[in-house]
Length: 311
Image (cartoon, rainbow, N blue to C red; front, side):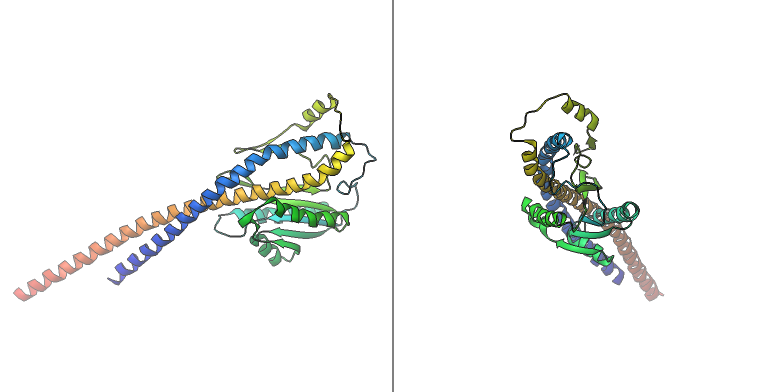
């Protein structure tokens, strides 16, 4: 009977866990709908702003100077903004991203810039914990912003990197995050934020199924075949658009990561719930077998006792 009691306790425990994972799945699904709607509504805006900047930057005179557009120079300090999640229970979401960041630093950036120092701005508790453990220099931590994500979060971070870049404390800025592709696919990516130039103003938009990149040469041909009259001047437009574009690029990364996080968490909790149900079925079968065996043993003992009394 002790064995039966143990199995019954395990079934009750797993049933309680399944209720929790199912509730977490429903919460993640609710958040995902809002996050997915936000990023899908914002993507056309990001795409159009990049098209405008691509047009202006490619035709601006070489005499134009802006703090965010820096000519070629030695790269001594690189800042990485790594966006992970604040919580676990989201499958391989954080592990894949942090492994991707580690590989990018070790196999690409350190090889291309062997003398550069690397600094990190972490967004999300999982990112902070990882880079603290691996002895990277963390200049700022932003934890808990996904509980109430607004564009002000992006603006606050941009103010920090803007000042550091203008003061020449850093020479390049990259953002590493998970892009939301669809419910089952979240793709880690690294984008160059600063310095701004035509090479890192990309005309791309991520759809629900795949990432589509425009043919930049075709876009340039369209622009070159057309004449534009700018009012105000290109320089004034760039002075206003470049800081705004920096905010939008980081805001996009936050929205992508938020949607990807909720999608990963929803799928992880759905898998956990299904696994719990399968385990309950197996334990229920074991319980029935053990119960039947106990009943059979008792019946045999009764019959044996009755036969002994007769003898």
